[in-house]
Length: 557
Image (cartoon, rainbow, N blue to C red):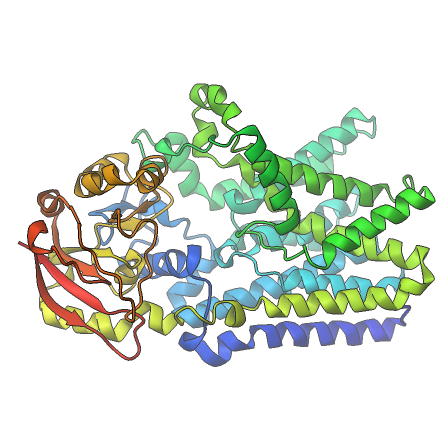
């Protein structure tokens, strides 16, 4: 456990090699790699391609992109000041994806390492814990398009704590300057900066002085985010046009459902900030707490106990944000529905992994026989995280090439023989992002926000299907981010592969409403047995070895 300084350098090199090995399937397999579908292939990757091809990367605040829903606002696709937009503009999709993963994971390792070394585990004897925990943090299966929104927090905290201590080194300000260019305010750093603000205020209240350098650094980073995210700021603060977020209702859980969700989130985490801590890290945290209680180490280990308590509070906050007791306030203050304040739990990866490092230190210091076990626990967590590599956990889902099926959709385009801007399509049984990725102009979409009047227009197409099924009706009416052709028979399922035996037997669409907003073709992943009743004509069926789907091309008549 106790190592020389030169041994720490070897550990760092070994850790970097393991990160490279973890990333290798993306670089080696390319489009044949298997990656996350939810909030990734079904959305973000297609968004980057649509934006790149639109010619509107630098579009004005009121410009639109006609390929989606007859003109989705340019601001829906985020800021051109984000590095990830340029990666996808300059490189093919999977090269951009692999590079983004590499940037994020290497910076995550660096940030956690310097944070632990400078502010939590300074002594050389903790080298293995520093490097090991930094490696595990870097291997967490973060949400890809979140970039450094959560995994960049250790680096930001390192810089802020340095400035708080009076250090004026340029590296601190460089970190605070660059992070906004490769992360998101609403997907992490709004909550982090708010926490920093409360930290500064708490120290003022405790009589530790105003620490203007620390305060100004928080304001500086916040100001940079407002510049980088100027489109988001403009859309939500200054736009008068109602959008789909205006009908997002989050407060629906009972008290006991909220309690249950609190413990579920505490133990298992959340899909957008997967920490994979339940199997190894959580028992380690509780073992450290047991040692603190048994040996009366409350004062000495107050940082650990604070982080463990904060960890649980963040889970409770997340769960109770959806408690229906908020309804009186959400009715009075509409922004409580349009902005997801539950995301304070996005601080948990930072909190959990710093807590993991401190817990291992506590175990090693207080139980000699646990020293080799502490090493084993780090290795075990690394192995668990390797098992969560996309290539393993998404192996049964389509590869990137199979998902987007470029060759198949080229065949469809060649069959239609019309300029794609001259007609509009929608999909059934597959994500509309697939058609969008292949350049088709779609009436359906998955976006964070879009004009509310369009949602009402689109709803007319599927209104009879929504009447039959409360689940999809609530999903569409009280959120609507997925503006899909939902059907009662399929529910909230939209990935029917070419070997599926599913059929639509009782479809009821308003095809006249579909045609009124430009609809001409429907790409269906399954056959529609009553197509004629819906005024749909089956033009042709398309399939391909490389594609995950069989597409039934229906024309509205």
